[in-house]
Length: 444
Image 1 (cartoon, helix red, strand yellow):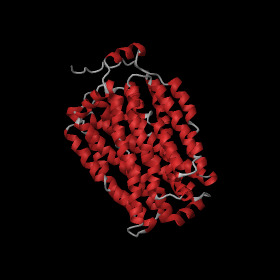
Image 2: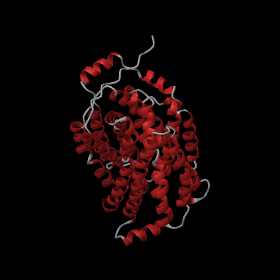
Image 3: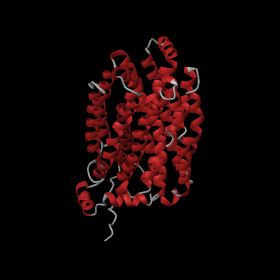
Image 4: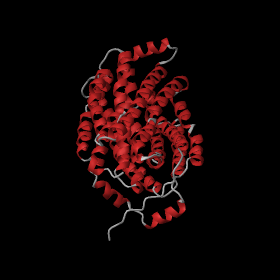
């Protein structure tokens, strides 16, 4: 007997004022999520020196160790979010990832640090799938991409905060203290999430009882997704974007330290700072500012252009993926530190345009009862390929160019960044291919 679709939950409307409040709370939570995830990037070089690591081990610590548990646990947590209280799931997740971030500061060797990073991944797995599902329930369809893009601004904001705060604290007190400070705010926002975010399913107990009797299995939900060609094209395109972005992130500060160390130190001294603090502030500010603008702009463009032609949801990130390439290559090829940092603004802005369109597409091609699951499957693909393999691959390329190819550490990391950015061509091709199917796959 064929399985029937789960009846959509009855959604209680929320006021526009509360909607704004909830979106701001979720944005701050996601900012903390990325702060705790990305602070390790500005700390990578002192950790490497202190613990005696190779670049591939840095990639393992920053990417694969985190990503395996983050991606695998995202799906069962999302299934839980289809029938349980989503704000409480988010609150519990905040507590978990914050505690493990603090524990990173106590690590005495690479394996203890990897274990703590795994714990961060376990906690963070419970944030975005229920958050995406909540946002989709809070806002009307025509504002969905913009709302999810607003939430996604937490990525560049968290990166900004992590780079700036991590660099300054590491310079003053060491890299261990930076992890401890990064994890501290989570307790407050876990409380805020648990007690002020509303679960908008009206008559939750009755609704859940009804859903339990008609629950769509994960296999059935996956079967629906398998019929959506757009979902997989977008998922793998976004995975390549994440592969490049996450892969390069742990090594961009190392690139500047190794290739422009004296110039960075001289610039830092002009502002009364040390190298890590200055570079963290500089990269954080340009990354945060450009990333926020890019994420916001991508959501706005997708909603406005998508109202006339749904293909805009994939056209916007496709073009951005292509235009990014020459600017990034130029940035890591210049001799001038200030010019390199300035030019990086452009690929960072273009590199965040895809957030709103991609996540909104995933939420719009399935019924409401499957949205958290769709988000989790999307994140599984993106993070397993992007976050899991990206840093390890770029680190391995850096080691390959530096050692066996004889270029040394400075040129090794430069060429690893250049080669990895060329994968953006694959992302462009996949996004562009999704133009053929997106109009047929959308359901609401």
